[in-house]
Length: 581
Image: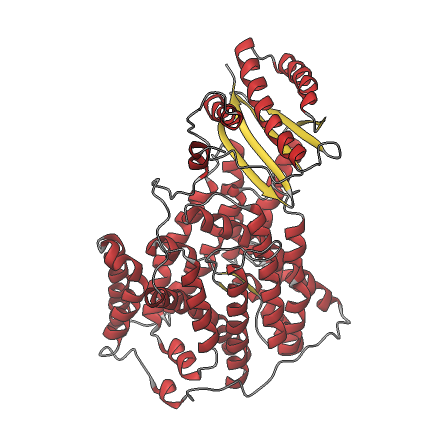
């Protein structure tokens, strides 16, 4: 293919510049440390909450912290891979999931930590199973659904951040003023470095906020480093994990359903996080990479449960940090994984993480919640919002917020399923998936036909398009646009099937759906097809077959809009909208 065509496929960032070179290892380590601090803050929070709620010993809380952090390090390392069926190939940091917290409380009440670990292990494979069917769910797990699930994560994070910042809700007078002032200073430091610091300070906004807040907390009497002095420099937890598979009551069954539901919701959340990360990094949506990432998340969750930790999923607050620092090199991830794994064996560091003052952690969390909500909103609107998709987003958010409030018929459901019905994150996420599924099955009116994977099939394609155009009442100009766009993509897919020797064995699927101002088209084939989404410019050298082919795809972008090209499970899906008069 000629140089002009190759240029059309060259990777570029959002502003059209070539990708920036990776940072040096020193800078990558410092950037990775910011991600690690953010991840460890969440990993330390959930074991601490469980420890206070169930009077767990210090050794048991340390085991939860150690095993969850080590499982998260393993899962994050797997995310950096980009193999055939494992790894996202991106900077996706992993941590524990708040969606499991209500069920974790009930599991500990019923059977202690061993039951919690065994239920987490049993639910871990569900994310990998979900990944296998991602290509069949592409019209259900849409960017709108992924975005709303990310926004739903804000409900729990904002509540936790506010509680950590304010401490005891009864505090008043001088203590309240000190907590407000220290947290406000950390928040202001982050916003200053991010908005006004330019390229020099912006990558360090999180670290800047933590340092400023912690230094001010010292003279205010809000910093206690005694646990750091008592902790050993290196060591392992003094208690080991265990598993309990003696499930013989209805409560065990209900808890398993709760864990499986939480695992499914976190799988959908991971899909939304991965979409948001790819968008933040300036990349196109890569569903095959998301499938590999889900498998990695499943393996990390299983490893964490076996080690004696909590289930693992993507850590949403690290995604806006990638945007804030504008560094998404895998070198940052490698450095972060090395730090996470090494620091797991350093009790002094783990103790220091628990000593960072609550007002500082809470204020930093509030800033990240704002970024996270904006990231989810942009993802939800990335492919356009119409009345029904906007309603899916709105109703799902409302359901999640209402349930999370704890005021929506709290005693109307059996106690055995309250870990599910009282989880606003899970209820809101399932609402989004259910509404999207109903919309796809009952509202979207797709007409689907199978065409032979041979260039001779263009005649049958033209005949079918003519029948559909008459059925939809399209004028001649709209018919011509629809036929030209479909023929170009059909020929493109068939050409790649023919080059792979598969043209006689496989078919090409054409789907059409009429809308008031356009016809939605999707053409799919089981082949690795050269990308058509990024060809929006082309210089033609007369007589060159490759350039003439490129010209046809270039014309596609001129007569159609919202051209998207994805690969999932070995299938290529090219979708676009053809305007109608």
